[in-house]
Length: 171
Image 1 (tube, rainbow, N blue to C red):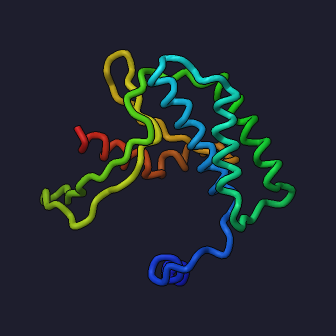
Image 2 (spheres, rainbow, N blue to C red; image 1 turned 90 degrees about the vertical axis):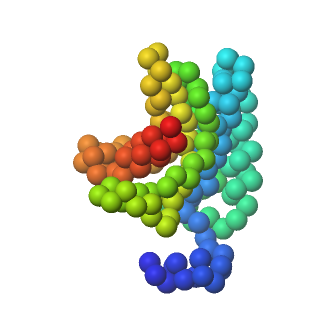
Image 3 (tube, one colour; image 1 turned 45 degrees about the vertical axis):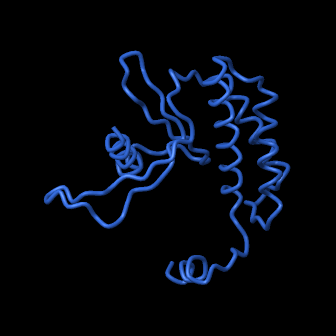
């Protein structure tokens, strides 16, 4: 929306509210980053209580602003949902060798036909980079959406292609 862009980026006005999924996803990502960093540094899973404490701390800090919750949800119900999700994450996740957690990148974009470097960069953060037994790097992207991606959404989503491009560009 051009008007939203004007207000947010040109005028620098604060948002009237944020949708609940933004602080929720941020808190889940912070807890997952804590989990992966601890595992990388120690070789052991942190206790689940520390994982949920990391989420709770981030959640409570980020929900001090105006948030618009979905019908039937509030700060407490989403906090409980996050704790439940992290419990399932803790039980089921089995990462390979962890190469990096929350790895920032900025790579040149090139015109594929001419090789010309474009005047902008591709900038982002890899949630997790793992390595398999053969030494292949694997990018892991955490999603907290309430709906599973359909095959069409996966096929049309550019994030995987852009992440692969960035990883290859980084060598």
